Length: 99
Image 1 (cartoon, helix red, strand yellow):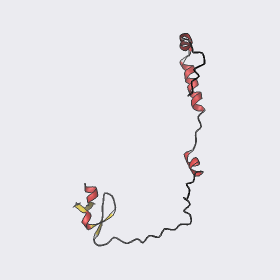
Image 2 (cartoon, one colour):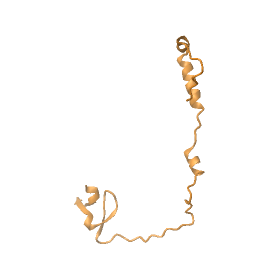
Image 3 (cartoon, one colour):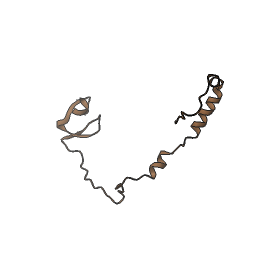
């Protein structure tokens, strides 16, 4: 908030005369004047350069889990058997999650 240093200052008796209700009313008026913007509406109008991927196709070859792989029950990633840390109660956990 800008301060006008050339404006006359209030005297002590003027400051005490301001009621709390007046101060609350001034505060609520100041807050009401702020603009509420919907973030999603603002984001829809904003586009990054080169971000148009509508004509792009991704082709990924998905392989089923192999015999020497397991699924970690902590991170749910498929890992090689060499990364098996523990299999407590039949639940395999990888070395990354075990540490």
